[in-house]
Length: 319
Image 1 (cartoon, one colour):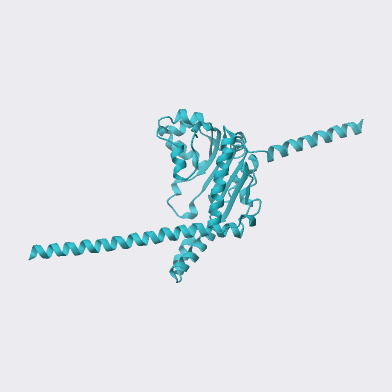
Image 2: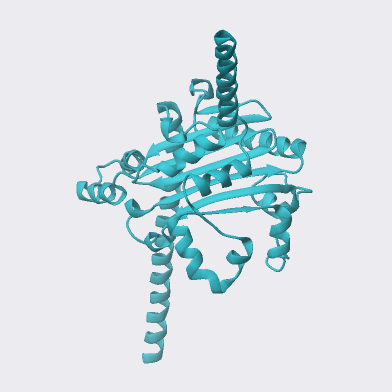
């Protein structure tokens, strides 16, 4: 009798453990995110109507600072933001980013859950004061349609990786995986690393050292800021995680585990991925800087020409 009881008890324990493991490791869902945001993070729930109502602006800002979550559908978004979406064309947005969104409608986003936390008052202060947390799960209406979009996006990333000399085979499975209808990309970098790479690139471009005080000020402005980005897709469900903060971002870790993806904060970007991303970032920055310098020079030349013409007119009038 005792043995039968023990066997039944063991079976129940094993069944319980299996159920828990399946819940933790299963595919993310909008419901999992909203439940975790409410019960584990104690975020404040907001509705589309509250976000759309301009009179709720102050209340929404307070909710955003504390941490808020939204649970909705594409159809509800169409209803609530009908006027704002009159000129909204997903196909045009796709063309702007060279992505095929022909035939896509807002209603194609079946279930949507978003958690967000940010102090917008600090957006114009030092970089190190930036504190942004964002987690979103989108379930698509048509799995085949979303699979095709994900494949296209990953193809574009791989082209970009090739341009940056990133050898994707050298990345860990936690950093990058692409199996067509399932995959992910995780980036986890310290802002100070980006700053170091930026100044290395600038020094190489200029052929001389950057003033140490300038470097020191920039490093001071970013402090211990960390940037983490996680993009996960599996069978019609897209999960996006973004965190930029000096703090530990415990809420992101909690939500990632709750919805069934590996905590992106535990995955350090490899030298291969970091090097490639920094190459893209710094080359883009230096190109911008170069264009800005060219524009400034053109303005100076133009001003000099205008001044010369004005001098000639004045001389003619005086003569």
